[in-house]
Amino acid sequence: MSGLTSEQKQQYDELGYVLLKGLFDPSELQPLIDELDTEIDRIARAYHADGLTDSLYADEGFETRFMRIVEDAEQAYREMVDSKFLGPEVFRLLSHAAFLDIVEDIVGPEVHCQGRHRLRPKLPNFGVADFRWHEDTEYATQRVTYVQQQYGLDRNASKTGGKFMSRIVAAPKMPEPNFWVPLVPVDEQNGCLHVLPGGHLHTPPYEEQWEPNTYVAELNDLEPLVVPMQVGDALLMHQHVPHVSPPNQTNGIRWSIDIRYQDGRRPVKSVREPGFLARSVERPQDVVTDYEGYKRIRDAVAEFRATSGIRF
Image (cartoon, rainbow, N blue to C red; front, side):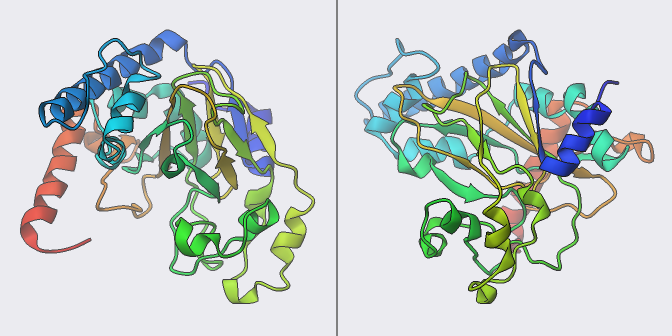
């Protein structure tokens, strides 16, 4: 087990992020890229058979083929993102010992991988794929936009722009370490992450306390950090550290995947998207060790939702 060094753990606690350069050999991620290529080919053939695209775009590469499909049929983007694509190589990454060792240093020996992992095909100049400043946590009904206002977005952006910066101040601070993993090299041009170091330590007030509030005043002293990365790197983030991904201004897709974990002894955050127990001392018999086991869990929940009439 390697996990975090004492310096990295201190940085995670104080700044809310750690850039883990070379956590993987790039070759370890190639099977996942190949798996995605196969899924893209499936989508291409299905859409072309339905007359929705002009071509299979089979000569295009990993960073461009899906973009060409979406140019013809924008709904393909939602199919890729909303389907929460899960294949054997995705599961292999979710359960990778390099992640679990680090998470164990943060949450303890009971490690649950949340089901809210996401593939992110960030297409060039495609507004749907752009995200404003936000934090990765459960969202409440109140919408607040402290970081957006402070860093160049108007206060009303969240009214139509999604769920941003909306945790309830009384909510328990259960550790939920997140990893953001690029599948292509990322920089400012194609939309690498920007983080606000230390922003996770500032508790946002409720929206009705908008003016004045100490949260925005405190954030005045924080400088956004641009985080370019290579394939094989991973960015570890506290779930409350504000971050953003600017628009992709290149001619290719910025592919990435984000993964979330929590203490396996705590209630899970999403029943609709079930995760799995990835490591355990107390319940080793319940650890899910293969893709087939995790797929059975996901399929069972999907079938129950479809047939029970119970919405959750």
